[in-house]
Image (cartoon, rainbow, N blue to C red):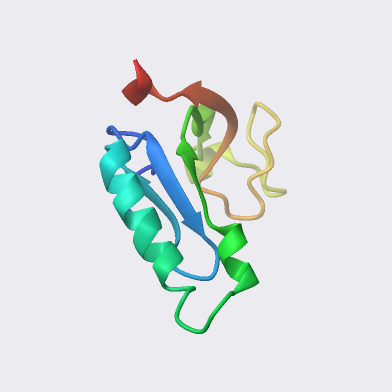
Length: 109
């Protein structure tokens, strides 16, 4: 989702429609359910479409957040092989390194 994580800012509910709009998050159950009904209806125009069984809706309990970010040091702090004083390899041109972890969705509290 452009501009932020789909599950932050109150988007605790979702619909996933792999043959339609993909993943969408919603702030309310009602909005999620309205969207899901419309997604399902798109499969019904020509009789039974087995793809409809792939449409799912639910609650987003956790999402992934960045942790332990290390920004690229100044060029003067990187040696000719691409390593900094901490042993990080910057030779591939990365702007930063980081890890990731799950974070509980605060919209559920």
